[in-house]
Amino acid sequence: MSATELRDLARLAARGAGAHAAQAAHFGRATVAHLTAGRDPKALQTALNELPGGPIQTLPFAASLDPVDGLSQTYSTLRTEKVVQPGAPARIDVPDRLVAFLTPLAGKTYVPASEASRLSGAGAGIADND
Image (cartoon, rainbow, N blue to C red; front, side, top):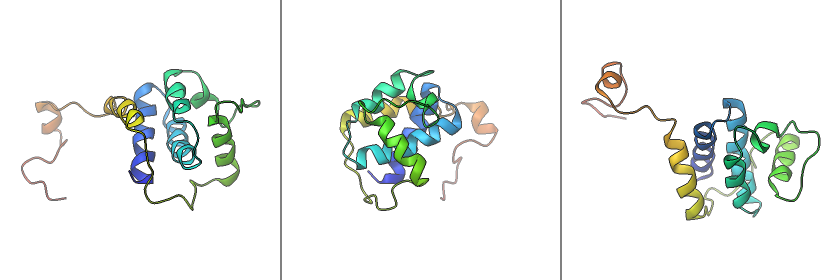
């Protein structure tokens, strides 16, 4: 999976799990940095399960960080670098279990297909030319 795809999937999953937009964006970037650094993906799932509280809502602004899970270390690194790992590989090996966990949460942010949504401009309609 590309770093961009992973960042966006994680951001949408955080939104779907209840994080605010800014915190979800931080989480998306942190997910890329976290996996690129070889840290445990379980910490990402745990953070999403703890919403509406937990590290996604408190980091990177938390005063005391728990270095045990590695996620706080990832957020701390992002806070000082201000970017998503410029040297990150183009493709990241993302565990299937993590993708399977993130995907339904991200799906909660999608507009359901309905006649009303199509009439108001959602979807490709008849001509899908993008």
